[in-house]
Length: 138
Image (tube, rainbow, N blue to C red; front, top):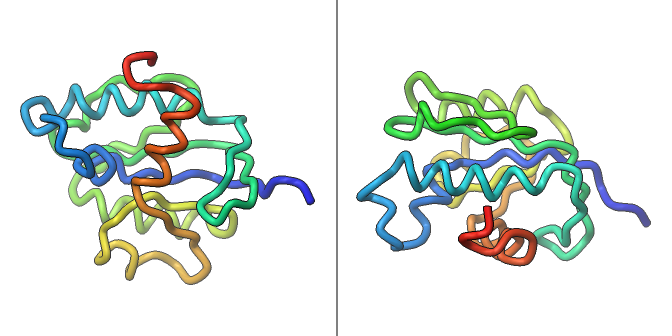
């Protein structure tokens, strides 16, 4: 069986905030580093959260607050939330429909996602990035 075509929708603030690595001293810098690493994912096939292969057709990242103005590396789609990042994530997930995999640990956001949206936490994404683009290599 082939890999499922998937659009990865990333809650950047939630992923950055999932590791106590000093990100709070430079939120925009931490987001820019994450985006740099995420740019290596579109077009790749990875083991999905349940182990089945997923082909990342696109990666969409929602940034907010101090990270709103970070550069958007190709080939990512960066959504710059004018207000709540959760609002932007829920709206984008609904617009993407089937085949979206949302990365967030935010329980409130998870409850707002459309039925059928696949969800995983930052741990899966960070582990996948470790394999594809080790820290400091982006």
